[in-house]
Length: 252
Ligand code: PEP
Image (cartoon, rainbow, N blue to C red):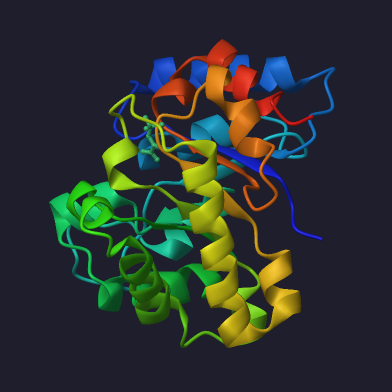
């Protein structure tokens, strides 16, 4: 059966001391509770190894927010999947809309990143989602389907089964404007159908599909109650241990 997951995406926030303190606070809040979901924090590259040292990996998974589309070599400033894995991180966010929008990440590039992440034992949290114009002009299903097909459908069923997907309508990210739980459920069910069409029912049913976009303690419960919403990818609200825990504990 697929897992429920709540994953924080810290983006480019927190200095190293601040990040270590935040990780410690989340880790401490998880001690003594048994959440009904896996909990992950995705942190800046500089924070990976020090954060890994202060968390209990059996309670809190660690991920990067990106990795390079090359294994190694003359790519100044890049951080490879093997480097990420060597810190103890187990996850990597790939295809976030901010990477697609500001850094020109295409499906071709993302395909390479997904392959390298999997080769290095990292679980990709692969983001998909339409922009406002596509929501308004009604092309959102086609857009999301193309994002999945182009970057992921060359994978074997075995490799595809290792992925976590995150549906993040771009118009809802950091805007305070959340998709309604019905809009999220509609898209998640659609995505599961797209996966089923390619890999069959078992793979589709076992794929965790997270919702991302202004998710907070006040709306998480309604979103997570939907049958095809398996948790959340959380930006802003993951920067405060209390609000992040308010989302972690939203699973009934
Ligand atoms: C995100 O960036 O993945 C995200 C969902 O951000 P926010 O929760 O701040 O909308």
